Image (cartoon, rainbow, N blue to C red; front, side):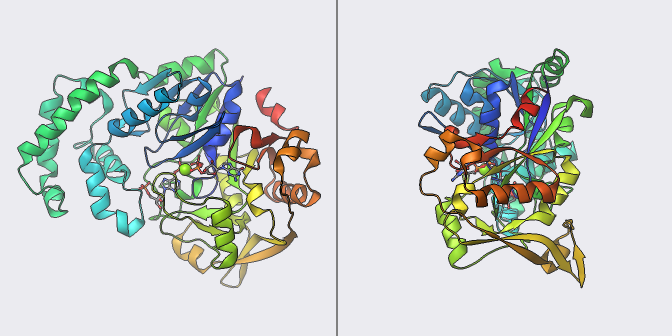
Length: 432
Ligand code: GDP
Ligand code: IMO
Ligand code: MG
């Protein structure tokens, strides 16, 4: 039984939630390793739609789920999410790492004041919380909430940050009052979180050692990785497959396969380069048909053609052998589809995207055109299976497989769980 990582190959929102939900049928444990409530993972199952921000998507199938040490953990968002999951009848079997970084109200306010407009962040406090973690002097962890010294530590942190809070306009009044407000919230958090606290590294390593099937669920996408994405237009965590090791405390040897999740086209929310971006009618067609509006913020997503140089980069740095291709249904109705097979950069042909803002901004996609398909009723085809799909759709997938040197295990043609079809390669994963 394997340890597998499910990772976004583009700019996030590739449909990782739907893929994790599908694969969770075989899983014993589903573990989130990076990011925080900037993530919005959608699962649609049995007529119910779940929008998950912090709780791993395995919760929808009632699986044991773990929020790892690498997470920026916002207790307010978490408790709301928990309520929603309970109201929808979900069983909650969950562990929160003691080592996860706390996101406090001022992180969100600082995010909105400083990075919101400049980077186009989700304003969920992610950058400021990780910044405090890395500084060490102002970072607070979930376990600190439960320490006798929490009150003292929080006051010390606020004093260290006072100047920053004032100059950014976050703190206008008295710092002691601000401190008391957070202390009041923290009492509720302590009460409601206590039963979930635990050692993620212990539980996950024991699960791996005893041969259980563990899914590591990534948030965001490869091109948003803080080191390997289009810096500075990235998030503040390690989104790539390697992030699972640091974000949970597992060995790279615990990972048997990496499954990349990609849309059949490309989308991006927020600022930053996007070589295959479309504007005009086709963009609007894809945006409307694909419901390309952010799960977390409702912002319209930027859309564009599939970008193979970017995906090759993603395959390389994540070690992706298998992919799940989503939203093939959205391209239906377009007569011709373009796919970027390379970039032209300063007169040279480049096959693997250079992850630098300036290069990506100058890169001109070299397109190949493929035939489109037109399907009105996917339900029938899904029931009959992958081989019944139009030959043009299968050719599109084969083209991607060949160009990237990967095997497609799942194809998505709708948000609902039953709208995912598997190929014969799926068994290579579940029989690992
Ligand atoms: P994630 O952040 O990677 O989990 O992705 P999101 O949930 O933010 O965005 C994916 C969106 O596409 C969600 O609204 C899903 O319900 C929807 N979705 C997922 N797979 C498919 C698919 O194959 N076809 C269509 N039309 N929608 C899909
Ligand atoms: P999931 O897990 C898409 C984007 C933001 C912004 C940049 C930095 O649902 O795929 P941040 O708030 O993280 O500091 O914002 O990253 N971003 C995402 N885009 N999907 C996400 O998560 C994202 N999380 C952050 O739009 O451009
Ligand atoms: Mg999302």
